[in-house]
Image (cartoon, rainbow, N blue to C red; front, side, top):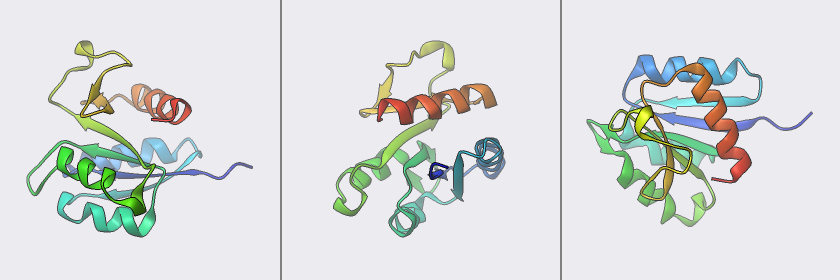
Length: 127
């Protein structure tokens, strides 16, 4: 059996992050950790080195785009896939080639179906 992919969700909205975690874990394909404080996200990412981080952009204690820049600039986190989750853009305004700061994103609110399809595609495409 293939190793489960690891994902860290960084989102200040506890309800959104828990629903996202549960939906991903139900597939049996992913192990998921949640971080509800952007200010400690980098520490958790360095400790766990996940395959992907689902990163909220707007958080009260940290800016998701700045966290993504820090990930990109940290050699110990090289190759980590960053996918933004944001309510700044609505799903109707996007397509699969849409990016923010060079990273793909999923528009909030995220349906379970869109979440699972998007995460699977991002892993397959190597984002």
